[in-house]
Length: 469
Ligand code: SF4
Image (cartoon, rainbow, N blue to C red; front, side, top):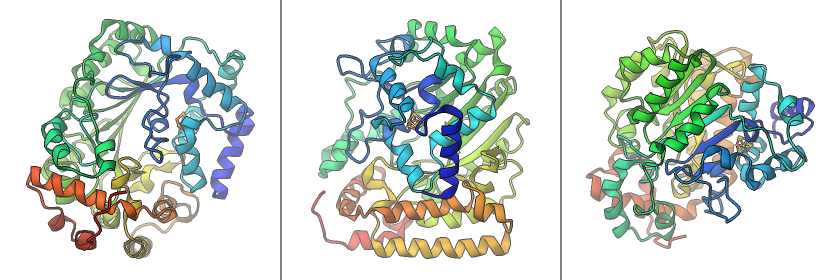
């Protein structure tokens, strides 16, 4: 763990009495696109290693996850699962649901826990007030200040790392892919039951009754998808907040592909305290088309140019999901982004530093595990390290020379080093046959050609190993 991260944890302990405290179980609820309720989006990825995707879900006494199609938000807010997480944190222990944050911290990464704590602290939030309000069994008052809403899976794209869980458009390919794929790991991780999936839970009046009641308490809203800009309930919710007079109290955050951005949406956003719009882009041009299929690059650039001209209360970042297909190209993409001379893309401040070091923000893809950058061969990882170091020199020669970027800034160069540490930490090359099986079948359906777009992966196609993990 880096000295910087140790310093952040020490501050958390001083402020709250517990080094493992995270504010989210006291202020926040999150959904999956099917309405399952989760502690937060990162908690739900903590079971990636074991393949258990129920980690981080707010399980009820009968073991089933609370689901907003059946349960109201307030009925889940103080269930046994939520109470246990709060008690575990106050006792200075790490809840099983939160292992991803703590693993990232030990790898020198500023985890969601750390930046959320920073953000809430910066807004003057009184951590001790909510700790003092917590009853010995973990119960807290029925006040939800922060919601992460994934209102169904309606989406205009079918990214390679998604499945029908996240994208309605993926359903077009699902049966064809799954009938030809043989890898058990792919079959398990992409598995989706269309009959069980409820894409209408967010139309229930009881859900919105609970949520609208919370509007006076809400400070932050986070929308992701599916594609939030396609979902009419998202817009109605914003209009309701404006109508009730609370929009200037509330900050909005998005993860979106941005392709459906409208002038009307920008007008609504102008009425909120702050909007942080993260545009998901994973590489330049054809590589992005392949990963975030079938994105047209001209449309991406049009969105970025428009976001670069938005009012001051709107900040915007490019958000890259770092995975096997794009990790080697991150330096090229960074040079491209820097060459665009954006006025505001990744120029806002987060944790004292420009988000993404002023280039782009990166998060690590853990699931599906067979797409993680950890599956690449040792030789390939060495090549990536060399490319990153070349880029570091280029950056120093052409762009950043301030000490802060190199030494102190966790969103600057330290983030790039953390990516290298992450890919080197474990050898998952045993999943290369699974990776091959998946893309061989996806290419057939989509009429794409991974070998043309990612020639550096030639060694994967040449490998004759077909033993699935
Ligand atoms: S510690 Fe991490 S995983 Fe747990 S609730 Fe906080 S942000 Fe989510």
